[in-house]
Image 1 (spheres, rainbow, N blue to C red):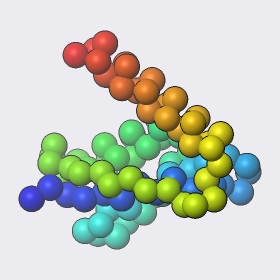
Image 2 (image 1 turned 90 degrees about the horizontal axis):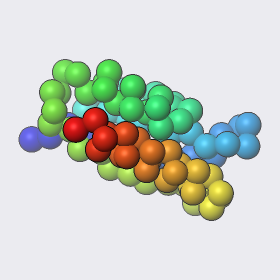
Image 3 (image 1 turned 90 degrees about the vertical axis):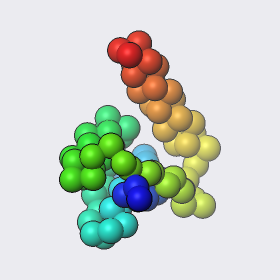
Image 4 (image 1 turned 45 degrees about the horizontal axis):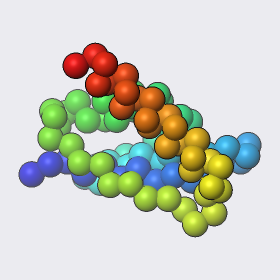
Length: 86
C-alpha cells in the first residue's frame, strides 16, 4: 500500500501561491513556496516510505488562473528536467 500525501494549492498572504503538503498517515504538514521546495519536502517526508508514494492534488477555489498557470509552468519545467536526466 502506498503512502498518501495531499498537495493543496492555496493563495498566500503575499499575493502568490503555496502548496500545503500533508502526510495523511502522520498528519504532518509543510508549506511549500514553489515546486522546487515541494519536490525537496516531498522527498524528505517520503524517505521512510521508499518509492511507494501517491500524491493527491487539489486546490482552493480562490486560487487565481494566473497562479494556477504559474504552478503548471513550474511543474512542466521539473518534468522536462527529469526526462532530460533519465
